[in-house]
Length: 306
Ligand code: MG
Ligand code: MG
Ligand code: MG
Image (tube, rainbow, N blue to C red; front, side, top):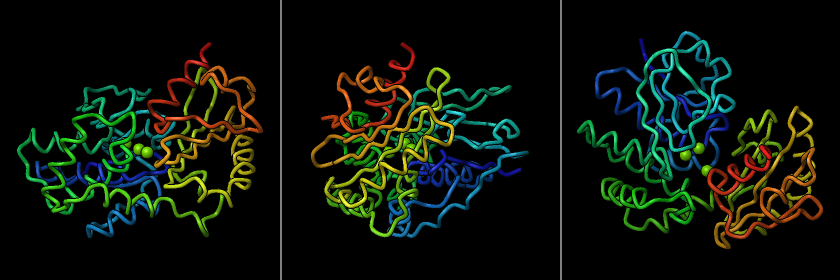
């Protein structure tokens, strides 16, 4: 029986590339393993796979009756809707431990590092399996993406060390240039429907019983979003009306190293509680904030709990 490796909803490059790499490793270890994704590739992921000539994973949204390994998440709200009908045999992740539980023991590799692919590289090393050049390339790009070219608060020395090792295998020498090439692709918004932009990198969380959606758009210059900002503000109202207590959309400027956050919430004081700064017309600039995982989710969870 094949195993399926799947990342979170609204798959990002780490979810896609870690699934591909882990499936390669597991298959070489003798377990037929298939990478899948819970949705279509975003432009950045499509660029990465194209650049290194790697086939995109099939889209899979049901795990019923299947053996699955989860990568890049362990929150039920981000996983397959029918995960309860699947058999989870492993988790490889770099986020806070979520609410996924299993009736049986499982293989778990959950490290406090900047990217799932950093953990997968350690797994290749542990099992003594060589990483193919093209897979090293996509893993490297996932690390550059998740750590925002090593600038994010989530980046660790381990991520840098692994990226260097992967770069050697992939034959990439200028990581800064490779990262910027990728983030330019990621920054392109022209012609993309507003709703797709909101959901491009969007995660739902359960915060003290409240459904809270947090999206993020990372761009090389916030001015790129000037023409679409008003539409984004309107769209998150709609997204909130679909059963959420709050929706936060981070517009992250990776050069200025901060984020403008667009906010709609049933609790007008939540942002001030979480960040010590109030919104003005539904927006607030958060200097130095680039990581949803490390600088936004914990603050909001605390604010929602108080
Ligand atoms: Mg991710
Ligand atoms: Mg990740
Ligand atoms: Mg990310």
